[in-house]
Image 1 (cartoon, rainbow, N blue to C red):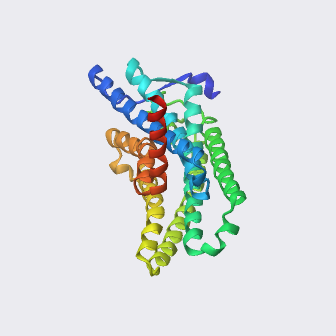
Image 2: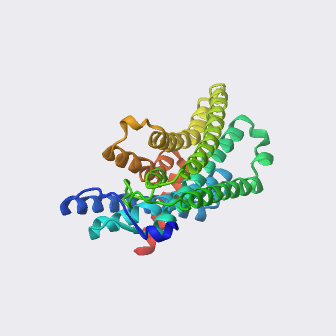
Image 3: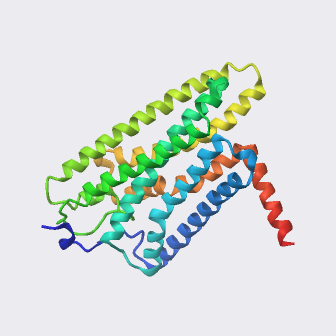
Length: 311
């Protein structure tokens, strides 16, 4: 029996039942979405406009901002539209697109954060070899590998999930189309195949996590051996934002997918999904701009140029 012949659309989980709370959620998410667009847009503009920021670290930061925009744009606009128009429906094609882009952007971001950890490791632990190990060509290759890996991961998961016959209704217990919730609707043992793919992906992500942890162990050891206090401060100012972003991204994602079923209920799943799918893309620009003096100087210059141009 064809999957498409049984289900033509899905019903997403509503944030609230009353109209007042729906509009409140719409306003809240609109503010978060606009803040994410503004913050990541400013980072893109700063890196693109200032030639001093045309380095490997800011090249990766530009890619991270693009991925953050894609991440939050995959889930939040549809949730806002549903809250505004008091509906829960999403088409079959729309649900498949959400699953694909969700895995594409989030998978690519995780692989990119791994590449950024390698960049910081080489910059601090092997500074004399930095130009040869992390040149412009190597940066482009690592970024392309991150985007390509995310794409292949998304194709694999989307094809596996939507090849399953779904006969347990069409209500998805989440505010966006999430694979674990869709698998609950399956009526065949084929879902074990997707679980196997998920386990394989988690294993790869765990390998990246171990690489990031080992990189930062070496980084902190090298930084603590620096004789200059100013040198230690500069090294920490470039590493701590990345470490904060990685910690937020990994901790919320791991809690969402690895928490025991005994503590899984709708309200908690909803809050956790917001924490790992909405919060990181919105706060990443703030984390990076708080401790990065070069980025703050460039943003101030952009604001001054805009003000003088409008006068």
